[in-house]
Image (cartoon, rainbow, N blue to C red):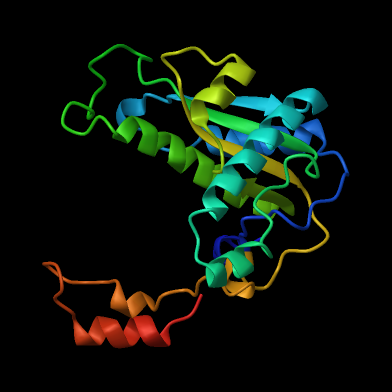
Length: 220
């Protein structure tokens, strides 16, 4: 698959999982792609916990449902009606889950490039997740990011050490199809912003008209 095709076709999958197992060699390729991500100071702060145990996944799903109910209470009735049509996770429907962590103590306290921006430790892990997601799409494997979770609770369930941060809890599996548009756009929760409204030149708020036209005319 062409890189731009993978980027354009990538989706946060929650509703389309099939129970088919992911072969170890496919999972290995996807994880290798994640491990090839850039990291500040070549610190490689990531770990990946592959979760297949049904009982563990049921505990995580219970927490996701609790957080879903908590969020629903914050919504207006109109937004609640849309939200109730949206599936927020596929923890049990997917063939496996992956917890991705950041160990910012790896290689000591003075990692090259992190003195002024310590948050680049977590950013590095997010880059690994982006690699994982695109590689999975190229393998026709769907990925979903479950964010309706108390991170500390998940850490206890997975026995993650105190000094290691949970960055993402992902669901992964083969899918019946990849939707043409993101699910939240299909369900009317939000729409994609015009890129030309988001790009400035040299300073905040300044537009380059030639670039603006190119952004509006160019498609990937």
